[in-house]
Image (cartoon, rainbow, N blue to C red; front, side, top):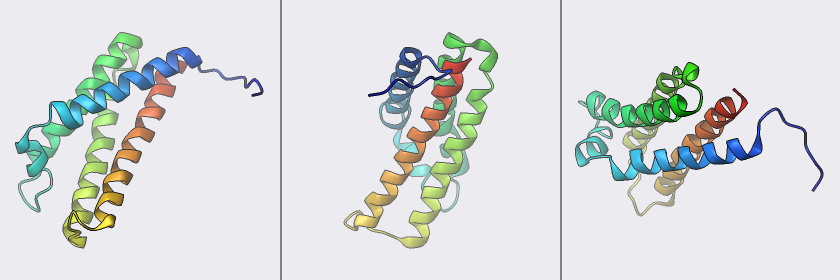
Length: 131
């Protein structure tokens, strides 16, 4: 494969991608409570469960940013806002479409949600690795 010049160190970028993958695993699966998971999907009273969940994402990003480049602490609230928009968007689409879990479109929506989170993490990793 030909060499590609890049201002982003590949090793640092790869480590940051792993850090964001671990952060995502923790926030979306290991630390998310039933109250968060079920509450953020409701048509009403969803705000606090959603913010608690996306707050885990923001906090994880804050820890990564502080370890790599403390001046980029502000990436944490950016991540919080992006994760909130993605998760709320998925919930609204699910509520309106009423896809049962047996419908392939339900799983496509879950996949798109996870894809958007990973694209967000790639962007954050690039910003931190280039800093």
